Each structure stands twice: as structure tokens, then as C-alpha cells.
Length: 150
Length: 147
Image (cartoon, rainbow over all chains, first blue to last red; front, side, top):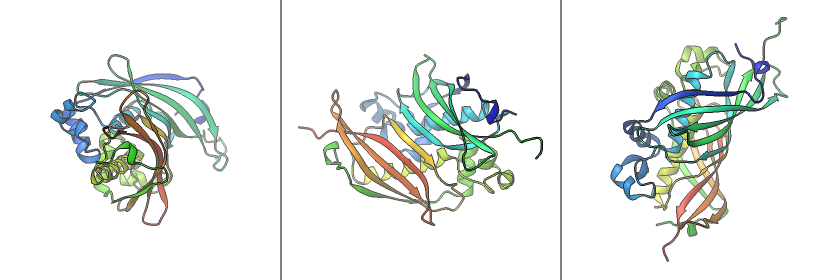
């Protein structure tokens, strides 16, 4: 198990593979982000995006799905406090294949809770042309290695 | 139609309310964030959260739904967002919680290159006990009023 102590600043990981479908873009948009350029191909063509694009929050959801599949197994994480500096850099379109590149930027020991710390992880979500479509800095909670005494 | 020119610093708005069910929390969790405390009530009870909680990304999605509905009510000429300055999941969201959204405009500025403008706003989601569960500062884009 990878604990807070085991995380190293500068550590870089490339992981994940997520095929974006039109059906999923529209399904997410119907539930959470019903704007014409996420819902309706015809309206999307007439918009400034020139075609159907995924909700930015949907891209965030696909990102966390890849994190859950690849990063969380074997890591003593316990959710996240949130994130900073999220940028939606390029449209995500049907047929795009996304992956993630993450770099550990900073480790912060909790002042109030001795059993955990926060790790700042900068991630770029890339499409099949290696263009970054989204980037963010996640504040991930890692548990500390239990001491031998406890 | 509400254009970029019509958004004023200090303007506040209620976004309305929503209440995620256990089934919705688990469905989102299974699809996008299958950590035990989002998908398995029994495992969630044993976790540091003491019970099933919504994915933070689900709470953001619910905030977006309320924001889009509010924008459509006022016919805002919305054209997406370049990003979010900060997002904090302040408290767990549990099945049956009633979340109410509120927003305040912090800053507006025009694009120098395109016929749009930017609005930076704070958005909060508060539960039925008045506790903030989500705090976001983010940027939205709107078309400018045609000359």
C-alpha cells in the first residue's frame, strides 16, 4: 500500500484510456448540463464549437474514472479536498480517446489530523493527439503509514 | 436575452435546490467514481465517512444542473467556461440531503479578441442544516450584446 510517506514530489504517471462516445456525452448532458452544444448535434454545429462537445464537468468525471481505475488501487487515499486551477483547454468530441498524465507537485502534512496529509497532484487530460483538453491540481488526501506501535 | 454587459459585480442569485437519492449517488459512483464510500453502503459505513457519500464530481454536476437551469430561466447568452479557480468539497453530501445553490458575481471583463466577455463568480451549495458542502470560484463566458 502506498501511503503519504511513500509519495515523492516530481513523481510522474501516465495512465488511463477512455473512449468518448456521442451517446455518453448526450446522456451526461441530459442529466447535468443540458446546454445545446452538449445535447444536440444540429445546434452544436451552429454554435462556436462547430459540433457536439462533452460538458467540461463530464470530462472531469471521466478523469476521476481513470484515476479510480489506475491510481487508487494500492494507494491509501481517502478522497480529496477539491481542486485548484482547473482549465478546460480544448473541446472533447465523440470518438476522442482520453488519458491522463499526473505529476506530484507538493506534500502538505495535516496540522489537525496526524493520520493523514494532502498531496497536490497536477494532472493533464490528453486526447489521442496528445493535446491537453483539461488540466487541474487535485488536493488528494493520503493516509499516513500506520506506526508499528498502533 | 441576458448578455455579458448585463452581469454586474455583486449581483447575487439563488440557483434553487436538489436532493440526490441513494440510488442516484450510487449510479454516479458506479459510472465515474467507484470508490467504496460512493458505491457500497456497507463499506461506506466502515470508512472515515461513516456512510454513503456522493462523489465530489457528482456534487459539482448537481451544481452545474442548477446553474444551467438558472441561466436558461434568465436567457443568459452563455457560451461555456474556460475553467475553475478553486473547488472545495467542504462536507460530505449524503442521500436525501437538500442542497441549495447560491452565487455571487466577483468580477467581469471583456475578451480582447472575441465578441464575448468573462464573469468570475463564487458558487456555494448549502445543505438543509445550512452547512456549505461545496464552494467554487469559476469563470463563465457570455456573448456580448450585439451593437
